[in-house]
Length: 363
Image 1 (cartoon, one colour):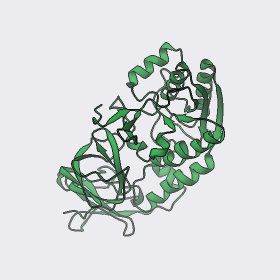
Image 2 (cartoon, rainbow, N blue to C red):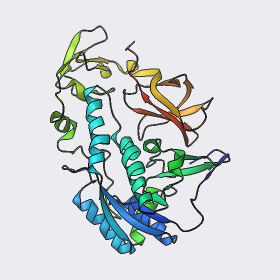
Image 3 (tube, helix red, strand yellow):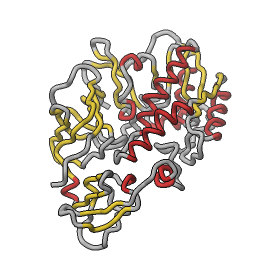
Image 4 (cartoon, one colour):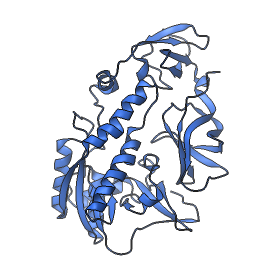
């Protein structure tokens, strides 16, 4: 990781703190709690009960609560379970469903961080007298020369989660800790093994805890919205295929479009839910030189000059500049699905973000 010369990695408060650790039942949060205990902080673990339905993603299950409790017992700390299911349904699940109904591709993990892990949990922690909340996210908090704090990439580029944490405000960053942000994933597992933690070899959870691997989005959304079949057309408007549910189609999709075999590969370049129409074209038409943004927001003062734009949790950062309320890429880049967050970095530090608006019409 590279950090600009005018920022430094924040190590938090110099004196021991009373810290509430969000323990998901995974290895990262387990080691985060262990490191804080070792550093002499007064640590309490808390597992959030968010999704009340079936889950096979390795998150939000009874087994995860048991794993978190076992680690807390090993560390000799208290452990609690907080039921935030009502907020999760309202703030994460409902917007996820509404976005699909409108033809957008949502980011539920970002909304969970915004409203649950770093809002409701933080407010609960403050009410209980804690100084800070810690999580197992792979990210860092850096402090600028003027004292301002920012989210930055963690040490392990492959596991970095700064993209889904871009919503954290400076005030929030003063009250959160990311103890494993300076470690690689392999180092985290080695620490868990060395300490005899039950989660040392536990697989990573999937991104969306309420979407099962067996049922997928179609099953989940099929009971919550009325999906409609749609026509798949080419650039000239001629129908070349069909989809069972236009609301489930995303930009860049290649399969499940009912296309005849042969010819060059065709990709989704536009989705029009009101007209129940999906437009496909060749690989070149999947590329654009800019993306328009809704609600572009800077973390501090707007940055003028070269930046990097990341358009998915584990996407490749693309060189760009901001042009009004649009991101202009220095070279052609893949279209961004409406609803996806576009996070702006200066080096490894998050400086702003926006949400992709409806893209341009196919050329």
